[in-house]
Image (tube, rainbow, N blue to C red):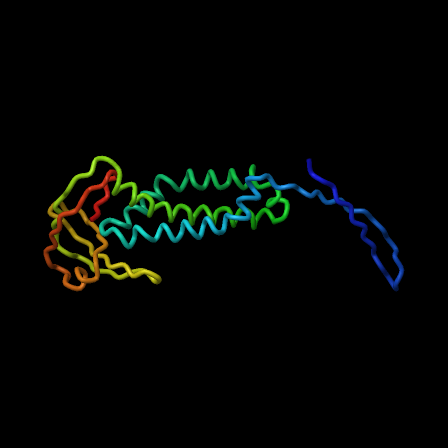
Length: 197
């Protein structure tokens, strides 16, 4: 049950109190779930962010495709769950912050979780059932370097069927390839249909 806290306020003019009023504030007691989330949520988010970087250093292949997959299939559930937690599981936080700020923080966290889930899909893709191999062959049509904290080397191929495939490769392989060159590599097809090695 919310606790009521009464605070007396006075309006002063020329050193005299003219008006005295009582203002009641509701002090909302956080639930155990909310208390844990507010105490450990930042650490959990940081740990998840660090763990999500690991697959990017382990695997080569269609890394961007995993994030597109996460955006397509996981973004809606993550956003719905985040908004639900904010509206129904964080009463104390809602009472302390403005609605705009609360919604902004909720959506920002949901966006971060969606991006990080793309890395976890790489792990599921590599360790799930239905693994197979595929010979990828095509002309290199584009080379690209991206990333700030971790540099990624990407090449885009056009195979014999006209399909464009963008692969993350090692620096050594990236440095040896030139646009127009024929690229051929045997890769694995994971349980989510993503190419990797």
